[in-house]
Length: 200
Image (cartoon, rainbow, N blue to C red):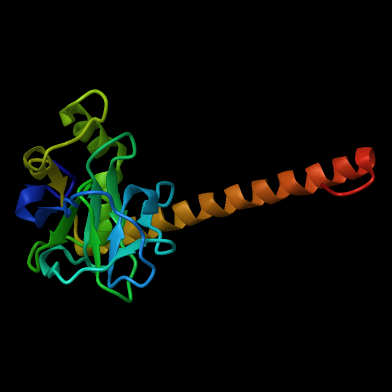
């Protein structure tokens, strides 16, 4: 149990729905009317969905049950990068494919999606998920096992504070990585100029 004394099962605070199982080969149609999130669209470091470059398909079917909003979370249920991913705001209808579960917090669940994103990616929760994963080639967690995860629920104020600090730390790490990349490029260019007489 958490310090707040309240721990609930994930099933009790969110609706867990599998992503859409697309049949056949999918190709990108830039003029399509439905965006489809795949594993390739994830930023694993920031644990968010990248809005750039998401494939589209053209369809006449209704996918209302699969449509996501920024208030939902996606949970990658397979592979080594499993975990929760935040969703940006999309301009067009968007659905996730079958590698994901859609997590929709209930209106009276006393849990914020941003806090849920953090706690599902926390080391302790991730270890529990990993212990429940099945399969060797492509380990996965089932919808039933995911729903049984116990989630500590602190106060709303604490939830907000946790997300702000966690998000700031991720942004800081991203900036540090970019700075190191720029430094590498600068040094490489300076050294190459000494040897080859020009930038490379």
